[in-house]
Length: 78
Image 1 (cartoon, helix red, strand yellow):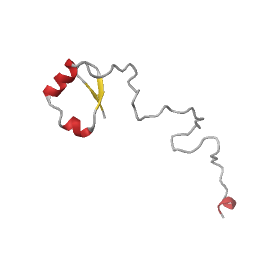
Image 2 (cartoon, helix red, strand yellow):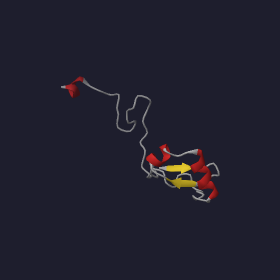
Image 3 (cartoon, one colour):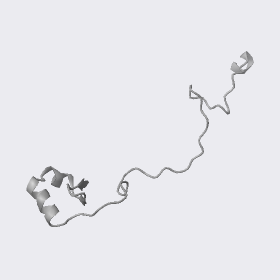
Image 4 (cartoon, one colour):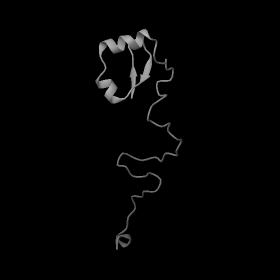
């Protein structure tokens, strides 16, 4: 997991290490100048960059406005 120290630097630690982290440990990491400054807040994100997709125009009911037709005859239903 990624943990941001109070000085703004980011370190990689396991969940077990995070749960056992004390105030003295945090002070030691900051005094030892551990970690990196991350400029991009999404650098280690699990969210992927959205791919450009063609979006269809849906109306408020969720129907595709291009293919849906209100004209329905009883012959089409049988």
